[in-house]
Length: 259
Image (cartoon, rainbow, N blue to C red):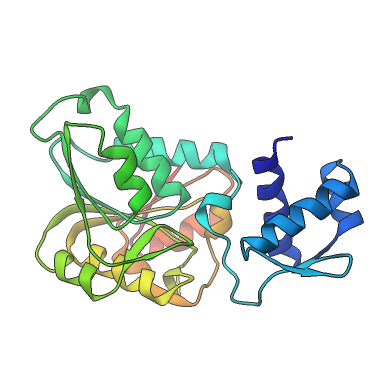
C-alpha cells in the first residue's frame, strides 16, 4: 500500500471512529506499528489530526475530511452516477457544478463525451470548485466560468459574497449538486453553511436541478440546508436505494434514476 493510500485509509478510519490506537491501525492496514507512528507524526505536522500517547484523535466534532484525502468510497457507484448525470446534459447547455467527489466525477464524464468534443462552446461550465475548473480548463471546447470567493481548503470550493456577485448575473440550464445529505423532509444539505449558500444560489439560477448522490447520502440530515426536496427535479443514485426511499422521493415530485 502506498503512503497516500495509507494516509487516506487512516484518515477515513479516524473520522469514522474519532480515535485510533497505533496497534489498532497497524492491524487494520496490515503494516508495522512503526509505520503507523511515522504516519501519525507526519499527519499531525499537517494538522490533519491530533497526536496522542499511543495513537491519534480528530480535531473535534466539526472535523471535516479534506477532499484530497477522501478515499474512493463508493467509487464505482459514483462513476456510474456521474456517467448517468452527464447523459442528462445536452450540448450547448450552461451547467453549474458544485464541488465534491461525485461532481468531480461528473466533470470527468462530461469531458470524455464524444459529442462534446467540439463546439463553440460545447458546454458552458459554471463552478465554484477550483479542482473541477482546473481539470476542465484544458478542454478548449468548454467555456469555464469560475466564481470568485474565498477558497475552502477542505473542499477546494470558493465561497462568500464575491461568489454571490458572479452567480447573481448568470442563468443556468442545469445545476448539478453534490450533497452530504438528501432527505424528503429536510431537503438537500451540506456540512458547511457557506458552501450551502453557494449551492443554493446555483439552484436558484438553474432551470432544473439534478442531485448526484450515492444511496448512503439518502435519508440523511446535515447541518446546512441547500434546498427543499421539492426543488430537486432529478436524483441520480445507485441501485442500493430502497424501493420505499424511491417512492417517497417520487411522491415529492423528484424523478429518481438508479444506476
